[in-house]
Every structure is written in structure tokens, then in C-alpha cells.
Image: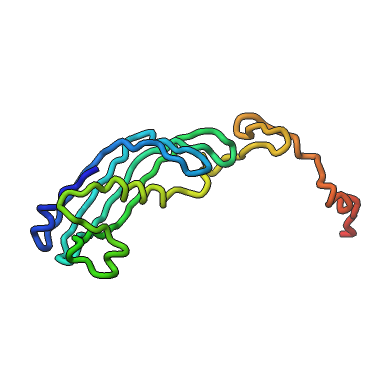
Length: 169
């Protein structure tokens, strides 16, 4: 995923648009392996401020994930905006050296930077839908597919004494 910023860099106040598409390989998060179901589509607007190149972009893709409630696999659509700052190494201030993408030449590969944005935007747990009922803790049935009545009449033994208590109201 390469971008050539030569035309933008040479014109102060100049800007340029880039539309990039590339396939990314699957990656391991430690708890699960995520794979891309669609190519990563990146749209960039690069603006030259004479001190840096300011980048506004959006990333669109789809990931194959496993729901944290029902354990079914599903496609997780990802559409996220991001902002970045690109600076040529010779012009970078001390602050920019720590936060900005430092450039040594006009053509740069931003695949690693895009991958970083994707990983930072991922949720801690993937949920297939807000209505997902998950698995029954007693029999393990997927409550989205089959109704389960395992735990309806089971009283927690720590609270059994409260069942005998009667209200005077």
C-alpha cells in the first residue's frame, strides 16, 4: 500500500487524494485469529501545511470474527476514520519525531500504519448483534437458535432462604 506524496510536498498549501486497495493476511490477537473477508480499502486526503503533511482518511474492510456470547462466526464490518501526520525526517520537531510518521522519501508504504489503526479500533470482545442471547450456562445451547428453559426454576442455594420469606404487604 504505497503512496507517492511528491506532488503534494512540492506545493505549499497543496493537497492530494489517494484511493488504495490491498489484501491483508489474517492475524493472531492472542485470543483468536482474525481474517479479512474483504480487501482493505483506504481513502486519503493529504494536505501540505508547509510544516507537515496532514492526512485525513477512512478505512473500510470486513473481518471474520467469533462472537463472544454465542461463539458463532460472523462478518464484522469495519469503517473507521483516522487522522495522521507525516513529516520528512529532516524537518521534524522533537514532538513530531515521537508521534508522526517520519518520511525519508516521497514514496512510502503505509500498510503497517493502516494495520495499526485497524487493530486499535477493534473491540475487546466481538458481539454478533446487540440482541445476541449467548449460550445457556447449564446445557450450552445457543439461545439464539433454540429456546432453553434450563435455569428458569433453579434457585441459587445461597438465596434459598429468601424464598421462604413472606412479605406482609
